[in-house]
Length: 174
Image 1 (cartoon, helix red, strand yellow):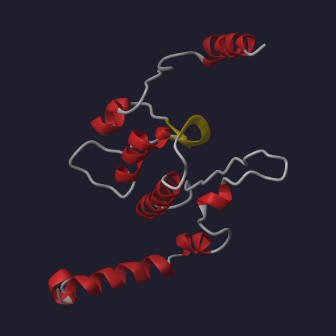
Image 2 (cartoon, rainbow, N blue to C red):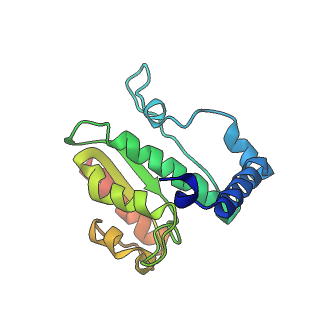
């Protein structure tokens, strides 16, 4: 198959221009420095045996760049998950807060949707948990919802109910 049959010249030029704009973007500059995107290194136990907490914050990026960056991070995380041995013991936990707009219902197909749905379906078999936080679960793809346990804190007053829950949870831990 020839290149023009796969991706016409006009579309290739458009793609090249979009990638060049992204790479030249001041908001994306911070992502080209720092630690490599190596999930295995991020989650490797330290000398004391503890696994570090890794926080990826994209709050300062505009929407298009945020979606692209999270799509890449989630694809890398999913690739790492598939290298893990099967286990029932929790070895890692992916927490995604304010997931609204990142796993939208069909027909939207954003870069974050496929890896998140796949992680919800498959990660538990590799000892990886996925925790999604949202204010409206109906904004999520039905495949994501069907592969998730559901807990709700809707309408609670954190000072009264939240602290009571915390005390009860702590009491069960001894």
